[in-house]
Amino acid sequence: MPISRNTRQKQIIDEEIKKFKIFFSSEELLNNCKVKDTKLGIATIYRYLKTLKQQGKIYSYQCDKKTIYSNKKRSHCHYICEETGKSFHFDIESLDFLKGIVPGDITSIQLEVRGICKKHDHK
Image 1 (cartoon, rainbow, N blue to C red):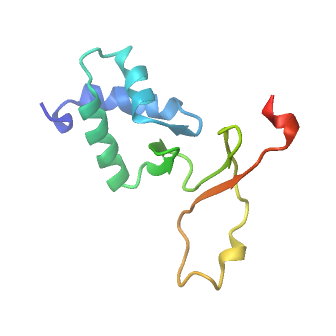
Image 2 (cartoon, rainbow, N blue to C red; image 1 turned 180 degrees about the horizontal axis):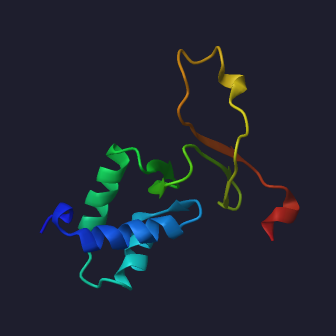
């Protein structure tokens, strides 16, 4: 049965998406939803996330070779330590440095910065 016909499942998914503070994966969303509806499957989650993305209600990004989603953040920036593999999300307050470089208005960005953490961060 398609997700568009099952408003209870949509309600459960919508409720769980709102609980995430920043980013979430489809697997995390499914695990949270399964507590309320054990019949809900990953295919339903994928279809509904695709619909929400097309409607502009959520955003998707690539992070560590996985797709992550957010209903709050229009941009995704993270730093990856090349020694430890740890990933840290960060925000950029201003995109003024991109004015004059890109030929249009910026609606969102995805930025991956790689480097080596300070030694005290490796603990």
